[in-house]
Length: 296
Image 1 (cartoon, rainbow, N blue to C red):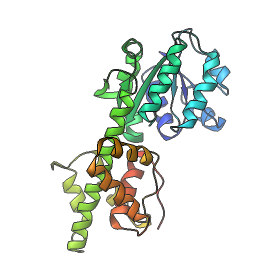
Image 2 (image 1 turned 180 degrees about the horizontal axis):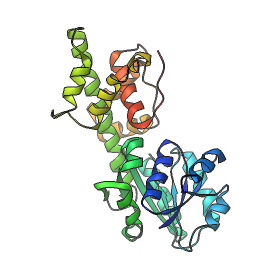
Image 3 (image 1 turned 180 degrees about the vertical axis):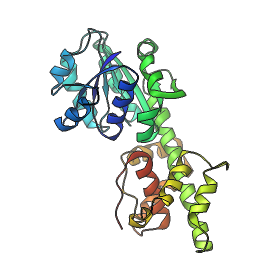
């Protein structure tokens, strides 16, 4: 399929490369043209304005937006809107708040346009090699775009969750679970490190990430963090505030998720006093998503 793709950040760039590898024709636009020129060398069709991008798409257009959530998404939709016609589809693949997605869907529906909210998980490596996607919106629009989701995701790694907002809601809860899992791993390994400083933490991380009940992507990224010489040493024990943290506060209020609340408090406490837990959480965030960390 031929689609327009806006946003070539850490996730967006890898998603475009994934699409190209699966033989999709991707017309890219990015605010900074350097990124556009760079990815054009790898097979994407470049455009340097919204108008140019739209002009290179077929009659029925699919526009994938992969930018920071909140006001930037609304502003981008406003820029794209004048060039779209009835039946075109906008996809928001970022971490938008689900109630915002519902509003955007309703606004675009009135104009005869489709809107799919797609929560994307798997980090930068997943974006490049096989992601996980949670999708909400009209089923007919999902069906029209399903080949894209199937190609971009691992086997059984995408799902349709019904009405608008549900994709981003399922992803929001996923993020809350992720916060709790990261906090639990960081807390546990800190307890071991404090118990006996002679215990080889690389060995602990290795064993935890191979065959144990807590094995998985996060424990594997934690093991990778220990294996890179000097990597953990340069990370401070302060966890920077992430893009989804405010959204997590809303989820705590809506659903009373106590473990999530404790995980948020752990992060906040590191901003008052650096900790080993903060160092490990920062490392995991950097490993899977390329999130910046504070240097020691």
